[in-house]
Length: 333
Image 1 (tube, one colour):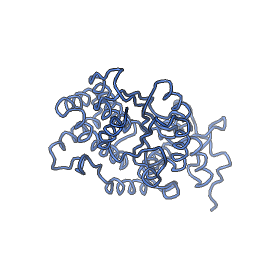
Image 2 (cartoon, rainbow, N blue to C red):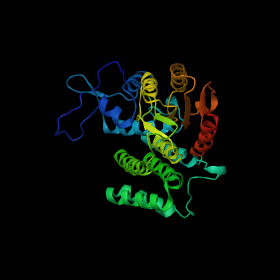
Image 3 (cartoon, rainbow, N blue to C red):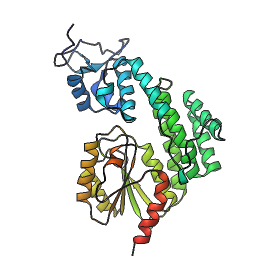
Image 4 (cartoon, rainbow, N blue to C red):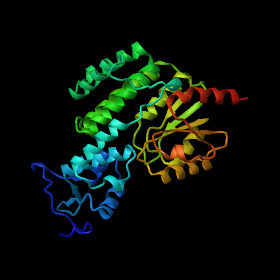
């Protein structure tokens, strides 16, 4: 039997509100998974997946099953898999790969090489599990209270490195193997974001603080929690931080640097990004910025470690922020 031709319209999927399983538009899939519309169309042609149905107007509609598979594929891409390895695999195989990826992850290193992620025997493991259960129970007030109490007990730096970092791993692994829904992961991210934003604002860093640091991501990067964690460590070191959030076009980053007088640009890159997009974007940005403005990068994108770019500094962990700031400050006249 020949595979379906993705250039031909798929079956019409009912999209009325009363339909039992309405399709999802390509815009909805893009928002939900973080996969761009162009990527979905390319995969449709190249891998014959996903092959969406069509509504009565001929617009693409994706089924619930396709959406779930695309979520798993995106998570696997974030852990370093290539599209050709995973696009179109059955749901069960994607989940199995996800469990393998979760079990083989290297734990982030803290200062002096100590493991930052807590293990089951560590003192914070019960607190991590409590937060996870609160996410599962959809207890917004309970989660916010628990996280806020942990900030008070641990301090912001330890809160990020010994609670949020391992909790991020636990949440990601649970999403990968089907124990969490995407809305639950978003709920967790927003809860942590609110607590970190409150903690940063409570530091009272003044407008005259130095250096002025601008934080953002390139247009292809939709993940922002790691960027906020970096901002926390920068604020603790007395930096005057300005976050543009995620997905800022490169020319706009350069304009923002000049408008706000930033001396350092901090960028975050996840493992799923196209290496060519990362390196070309960094070259373009470097060319648009004055030589005195430094570019600091971090994240799980492998190309950051493989490719050395002039005028771009790669920070291997949050622990590298403090010595880099010391170097920068000592170099100032």
